[in-house]
Image (tube, rainbow, N blue to C red):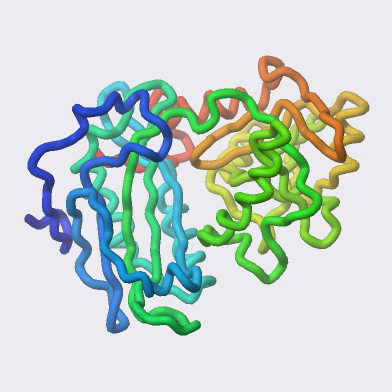
Length: 355
């Protein structure tokens, strides 16, 4: 069977969607019927295939397992009240995936495979997109090196895959975070600005230590002085101090988040004062002490807006204003949700309609 471009589609005989309550499943553990796979070898990409979701056979010598050539993206599809499925700013994910590929010495994925293949995949699995208020279909495109050889060099073969899973809210409640001043997420000249798998692997141990102390996540600080905040967990970080929305300026240690970009666009549109710059721990604590620290939240594809209610630092907890009093982040959360669900006009042209 052939779709709207050169792609092979092997459809599953019987959908598994009826086996699940897709509006009420754990995040990242229930996968849709199909996946897209495209292979790269001999210096070129080959025709992609959509096939039933399954385990991928691999060699224990596969290059990605030993040398870390693995990147990914995170994005979501939404269903409105009419049953129409749309993606949120997918071109941004496509651009960022290839930015990661370049940094990790991997081949760039053609737009036809990424966007064309994703469109066909979502048309096929549209029944898996939740229609609940906070539900979405989480989409995980990823690219891995597949050479079956031991030896430190860029692989000559790769596999690009897209899998999807229905998802609800990532954080069910506001979170407590601990300022991390020993370990770090990224260094200048490294890969902190791309979605390399190793960035997430290195974060797990510090996060585990924070969770043992009663926090859900950490605030990463710069690797040189540990005085300036960078990200929180796997999210970009934002503050409202006085009448200003602040977020760390982008650089090679901070991921250019698509939700971050969207939040800032809304802030500018609404007339808020916005600053993208270095933000120090002393500045945050001073703002907390004098009562001007109004809001603190993380933003990212999985969480959208994750409200931070407590910041731990140097053995002391600093409680922030109640979420109910937060005018900016709650407005952002509601606005993004309404745009994605088609309840308000998409004046930014952020939604990409699938069906």
